[in-house]
Amino acid sequence: MTLGLHERYGGYALITGAARGIGRAFAQYLAEDGFDLLLVDREADETGALAESLHAAHGVKAVPLVRDLGDPELIGEAQRWTNDYEVGLLVNNAGISPLDRFLEIPLESHLATLEINCRATLVLTHTVGKAMVSRRRGGIVIVSSASALSGSPYFCHYAATKGYGLNLACGLWSELRSGGVDVLAVCPGMTNTKPVRDRNLAADLPFYVPMSPPEPVALGALRALGKQPVVVPTLADRVSAGLLAKLPREWTLSLLKRSIEKMRG
Ligand SMILES: NC(=O)c1ccc[n+]([C@@H]2O[C@H](COP(=O)([O-])OP(=O)(O)OC[C@H]3O[C@@H](n4cnc5c(N)ncnc54)[C@H](OP(=O)(O)O)[C@@H]3O)[C@@H](O)[C@H]2O)c1
Image (cartoon, rainbow, N blue to C red; front, top):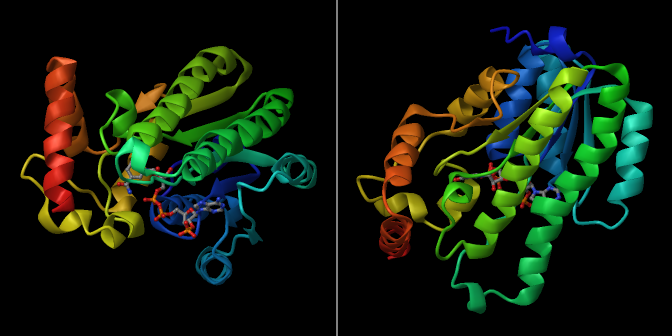
């Protein structure tokens, strides 16, 4: 299936958190679309194996970049990647999501979340974005979360970091589009990936909490890129987000609290 994004943006797609989950689904669709790939992740074995399998399946170049995005050296790395490769599409996907009462999560863990969910996105978007603007073409995706649309108990700081991504993408969508660079915030709802399975959240979903596999999330995002500033990528999540948005915020937060408590058992 061709999305026509490689034709539009050219060059490499740089995907963070590419080894698993939603990032892996992005990598698969973008390889199929003809992009060479820069696969950034801290999981060495899975990143290497993914690079080999995408090269074998689609004949594209796939470069595994095994890095921790929380590393202070990321600023220099991002500049080197931008100098060494023409990055036509940047997918800021990696994120971590500590789940507990805000005050029970150690401050160090909150700070690590800020580094990965916000700082890495800022560094890559600023560095790669400059090169895109000078070429007058490119695409930037920031994976936010449906939790950014309302805030969320037990994911308080996570939802706040996702609000950062959402608002950064919206402002940039407006600033950069006349210069040929498309920007998109993606707000998935609950998606069946390792962090969700590891915490057993998928086991006992309330009937009103939909859960999608990662592929429709990535595909919905890629189809929306260049058309709008924000997408909730699956129909079930659009319905759920639309209903929640109509409720008074205090009702939404109570509903979220009840459903997360039910899922955590
Ligand atoms: N799953 C959901 O329900 C959901 C809903 C809304 C939004 N999202 C967002 O979607 C994005 C992808 O989530 P996912 O569920 O697909 O996650 P995932 O399955 O855990 O995949 C994320 C990948 O990123 C890697 N990663 C995390 N921190 C990193 C770091 N500091 N440096 C390099 N790589 C790092 C992870 O490695 P490790 O396994 O070693 O951490 C993992 O391979 C995240 O931004 C998440 O917040 C997810």
